[in-house]
Image 1 (spheres, rainbow, N blue to C red):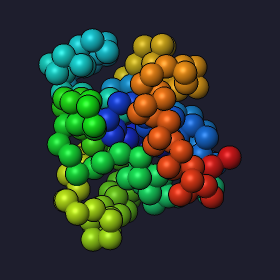
Image 2 (cartoon, rainbow, N blue to C red; image 1 turned 30 degrees about the vertical axis):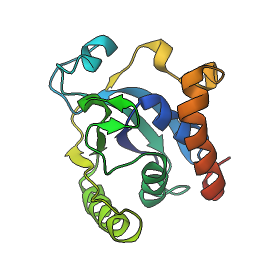
Image 3 (cartoon, rainbow, N blue to C red; image 1 turned 180 degrees about the horizontal axis):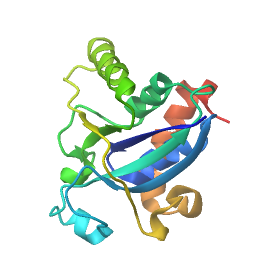
Image 4 (tube, rainbow, N blue to C red; image 1 turned 45 degrees about the horizontal axis):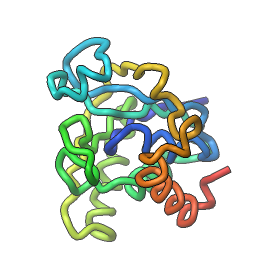
Length: 175
């Protein structure tokens, strides 16, 4: 049995890289969700006219990794307290968002956000929570971006530190 969750926390390349080597994660696809335009292209999304966020649709085996564990990684690799930005990446498409696929996941997500608000963050978590409606995969060159381009400056400067932090602090989740 597999389940899905769709997560956005800044540039989808960062989220994708953080989950690709997680035990129990079967598939990570970069794309767009949470907006109101069908089948948007990357240029449309970054223009701000679609209301979509850059997200990753994650397929996982809950008997190997739980939703709580996935959220632990998610909240470690991005700042869920900043509105419409992650570092120098600014715009509504970079917002923190969780799109849940199953109704029983909603309370788990709410409880985890409440827990993280109390334990780890000085500022309030402003991650949007929405019921999943649709996901549109990004263009092929966005898929497995870090694995295919890890020498690029963005990968070295932005993605790599997040990945190293996650693999160091949460090594029990990684292959």
